Image (cartoon, rainbow, N blue to C red; front, side, top):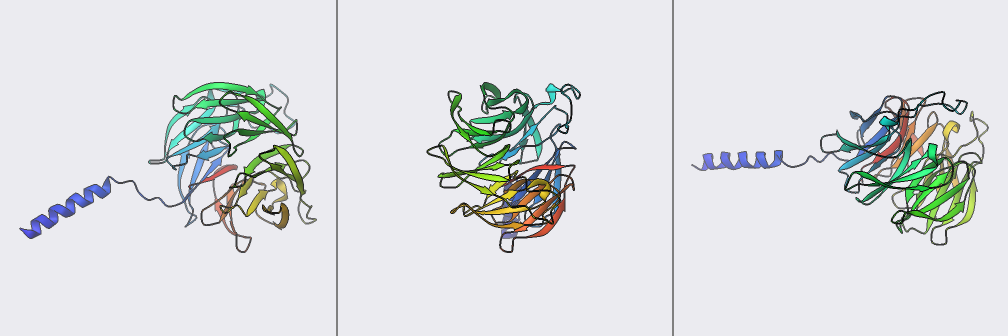
Length: 341
């Protein structure tokens, strides 16, 4: 009798456990611009464990705060270099949107409207998402609960990087106008502009919300900004390494989880700059990171991951030694990186 009761209890426990969500452990999600996919990487073993098809030209990527949803910007604008003539490569506007991936089963749940040519975006909790629309000099605001576009805001020309500030304003860089537009998404309207370095790309805020760092591609700068006053505090200039094929072109930026350091990718210079976020000074350059590192993110473990487009791989940097410890093959032209919380 006891044996049969024990077997019955074991069967109940097995059934209950089967219904529980799996502990996936930390995962890295990398958008692959050229093949319409996201590579899923185990952050501990560095193995690619899955590939998700999300749509055309996936670039910007974010995770929901509960790690249940992955959001990916997909675009119908053809990939083209700076020499392409307007209209030479006609866009497919039906391919524009924000792909939403259910991380429970890694399936594409839906694609949200986004405005034309979405590239970067950020979330405001689980309510809203703000997207940069480079071709129309606008920011689009998406209602995440109703899955619809709820507004647009005119901003600077060629908007690029998007980041949500601690006060729930959204900051968007303008590559052509060399400024950051501060948007109140509830109104919606631009409430301030901040002049920064040449061709600003990405924005990151310190955990205490006191400072922002804005990368400037064309003048090898990172601008420190007083978030409350919304004014520049100073500039960090990156030196050229004579051994590098290109001068540094600051692109992506990610802060260490404790907020003490900022890591900045430098494009074709192939390095990552390490900034002391407390003093706003350059501490070192990590050379030989990869071929044009662009997207970057930091894991809970402290490891730093960069997306290296031309070599179709991802580099892993050890924050203790500031050396590349692994190169992970990904899809075609890796662009953005997001890591579970």
